[in-house]
Image (tube, rainbow, N blue to C red):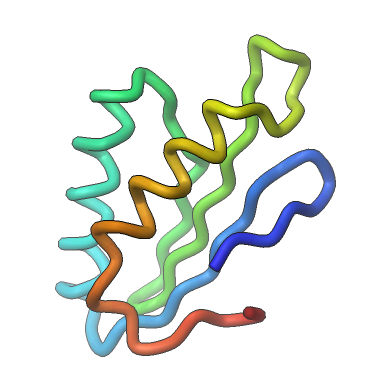
Length: 85
C-alpha cells in the first residue's frame, strides 16, 4: 500500500467516513509515539495521506520508515480503498 516517491514512503487511503479515517489516524499516532518516528499526516474528510521519511538521515527513506509502514499496514483494516495502489 506504500509507494516510494521523492525520498518518501507515501500511502493514500479512502475510508467510509470522517470518523473511520480519524479513528485510524488515532491508532497511527499511538504507533508513531511507540516508534518515536512521526509521519506527515494529511486528512480531508474521509481521505488520508501519510508520508514517511527520516529527517535525521537527510530526508530519505530508511529501514525505520519501512518498519513503521509495516506496523501501520497491520492496523489498517478499515480502509475502503487504497488510492493510487
